[in-house]
Image 1 (cartoon, rainbow, N blue to C red):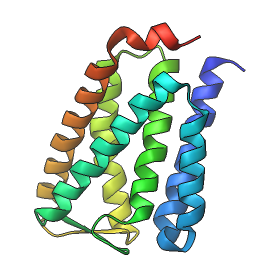
Image 2: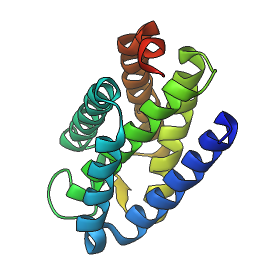
Image 3: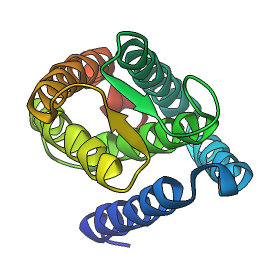
Length: 166
């Protein structure tokens, strides 16, 4: 399959997964978690390490935002299992995207910096999370956090990604 088609299919599949997770949250947490774990196991071992680092980093930054009173997740627990599954799946898809696309890391980081907060804003509109501060303030902090996570991830990956592509 053509690389561009793979990236397109991967993006559509993740968007469908994201939508289902955000809409059904705890009602499908076993399915969400299973799919995310399977996606992680389908990555090459070197890619899996990067995906796990990204998932943990994302969960950590979400925990900071929740702890500081910026956002609150609607679900069971401080950082609900559905959100951790979402981070793992995102990390697997993003890692695969970083390995397959010809886009430079800085452009992917920029896309993540803009797209991540947009997903939270949509999630807030769908009732998955609550913004505890004005929207502009929350989105500003989310953009900063996503920028840090994305730059960290792409800096960590560096050019080593090309060594394990094929």
